[in-house]
Amino acid sequence: MTKITKNFSDKEVLPRELHGYRWEWFIDFRIVEVAQKLRDIFGPITINNDRFNWSGYRTADCGVGAQFSQHRFGRALDLKFANTTPEEVQKYIIEHESEFMDLGLRRMENAAKTKTWLHIDCMHTGNKKIVIFNP
Image (cartoon, rainbow, N blue to C red):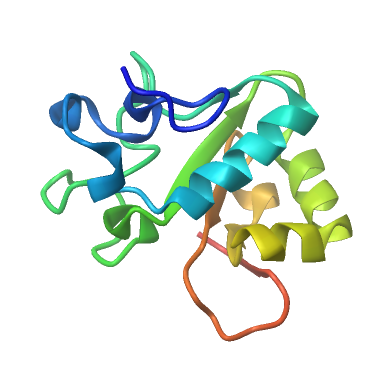
């Protein structure tokens, strides 16, 4: 296991099939920095674990999500929060938008639709605001 940030390791952002590989070959560090900032504010966050395998990087053949999902480019994470709801986190991010934009956050799925997780990604949009889209 290799630490990426204070609280996140490679095994949390890579699927089991890629454990042992260098995380930086697959994951954009900016998105893990955003997750760490949220962890510092809201407490424990689950990405991948024994139950979840595709909440971080997704291989081309994994069968989960859209063909051109930002997960397949290492620029997206699906976060599950232990002590709060995705909607509360999304609200906080929007209230502190410039801070999260500075870290590289560009898009989020609408937490009112996803309910149990918050999808965040750092795909370039050209917008000066974080884009919230429906899954």
